Image (cartoon, rainbow, N blue to C red):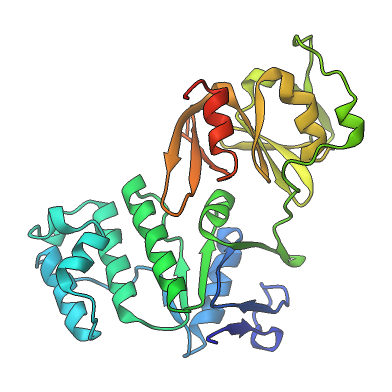
Length: 316
């Protein structure tokens, strides 16, 4: 067992609430928080000499090639995996001869991943590992996580994006001023006996979705909503980068919006199918949906829903 625990007595920073969290070697743990609280947690973790925090702050060698960088760390850490295999695993073979200063941000990130992987340290803490990178790099990181789990290495991932927490973590937590709380997940595919006997409307009548902003009640037309997510047991309407709180649970909203083309794509998300632009396939049967909005949002798609959503979108 290589588990490690962040104990309350180790948290002296007044900006952080007191909490204890054990990171197990059998799964990846993700913690979602705002950037300020995330920075404070990073300081706490860096204060423990037994924990390696990977945040891309340490430099690489910019004047030499990608392959030379990887080869240096391959020798430094005494990695037993052959160097060519490492280059292929981290999708670096096509840019191997390229100097770092000519590489894209995503390529640089994959070099960092290769370095961290070859270090073989336990445990591992990653800070915003997939922020601002391309699909290939996200997929590479997910594949690396599985290999790390296979050798019983505890992994903690700190993110400021809930979608990233759900995509990367086997278990996800939310850290806020009130403490550390596991992300509440509604049960999938539950149909109550009351709903089984209910005749849902076959046409969409005039209908508005309401949300509260301060002391105002705002009404939204269903087609303008990108998706709805569950936060602390409440449903949040999301339109581009804006979120609006509803006085309802995700299960209650789901039944009202089915007739308008909304679909429960994940235990914590309902998506407007008209806004879905792309289904992204990651490794290990992990999927996301890309939304056709101004910021090209991505949200998780449960592996149990992939066949169903393909049929709904007439892709099969």
